[in-house]
Length: 424
Image (cartoon, rainbow, N blue to C red):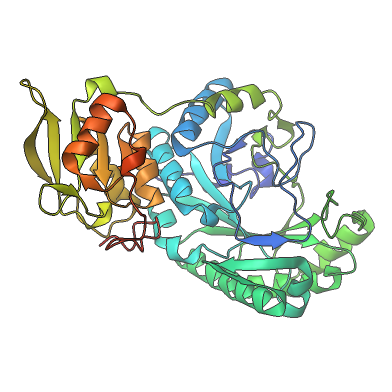
């Protein structure tokens, strides 16, 4: 991997803020916590705050948008993902976006902004993808105070509230700082100044994160937002912010030039082009995956015995490749060995390459990660059960697979989480 000049990140280095720009790619709509100051329902091109975006991009759309942004603003040095939810409530989309950007623009710095709740399983992945900067938002290191800031915290399918949720989130956040620093990643801590809730506590936040090796802290005044529990609180002024930064600065360097960027921010910090490029983003959000069906004559089938579609995509060790017969009907062309299990999203990219001559793949069940990656590579994923011949007839002739849709979770392998981690 090429050596990158990490000083070119304008948020971490004020000296480069006037010459180096950033783009936030809004590929992460879901969130795993609910903060009492956050509302992601509204979008106004004139409003600059986290959680706001003019559109949501899929990974292949984000890669195309990145190409167009760089053509219009070559001063961009950083590609970041900051929502509008949390990157690690959307790990498949985020990792695939980073992978595509690494292929197209390895010279860029890669940055992620997270609440820290779900990042731990992906530390090695983001390090391998060349992510150089990560921001973790920590506004309390006391669960009693955190319980006033977070309405709920979601861990998998379990929702925690009150101090239990705040304590779990804090545990993950502190472990995230340690793990990121062990991998040589620059860490910034965002701390929201919330009047009457945590302002006297923030210097303690600075002390704790500094002891774990965090590099810089960004004290961000609360921006009251409509339809949130903190909507009626006032926005802290300089008389509050400056003394807090001074006190916290005894423990950790302070960022003083934050613009409270949108989830689709683009351009220089002092010359944001989100409004100007709004049309470009929305156009990219409408792009479709490569439609190569007519150029792809075959269909891949996950099957145990060669008669039924009855195997989970992740469990298949081989795929039968079928095509149309010149005499009518369908014929088995060959069997292909599936990519090795256990290598995360890369496994599904490898599978898409293996099936590059296939217009579709049919399996009895599959997770969301392989589904997304196959679609983006032009291989239509179908979850069905029944006779192979019926599935082939539906794909080649009628296009209607509704009657063949399988019962996701009703077969072996149905516990798939969508990440690829439980697919062998």
